[in-house]
Image (cartoon, rainbow, N blue to C red; front, side, top):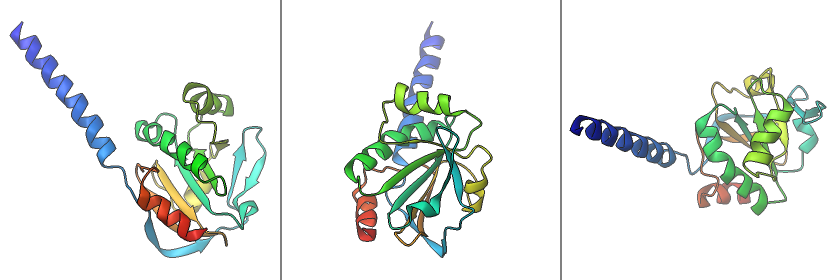
Length: 174
């Protein structure tokens, strides 16, 4: 009996520690990109209806471009703060582009029905063409793009989009 209690206690500590560790290791600011690049016409993704969307269509707006997967725990943890960011700054474009092989209906369910993240549109890059074009290697990753369409900053790994540092970096581009 004592052995079971000990094992359950260890398991509980591991769960609490791992959750706390994951949340505490979320970045609270974007890092500068060594060689900022302008997004090209080939920088495309797909909307909920399967229509191709060019990132260059958003030139003149600040873009927060998040790459995620529905199977990524860290991604799912950061999405609510990304949704709040979109709500706080309606003048910017906030995109969470799915990198998985899930279809638009699954992404719609994950974002809007299960989590009520209605400020984030369903966006897909199932072939990871855009992700690779912008130098992505694993999710989550986020890019901050200025009004001229230049990818200025990045976050590799989880992010806390409620961070004042992130808000200040966005405001500097407005």
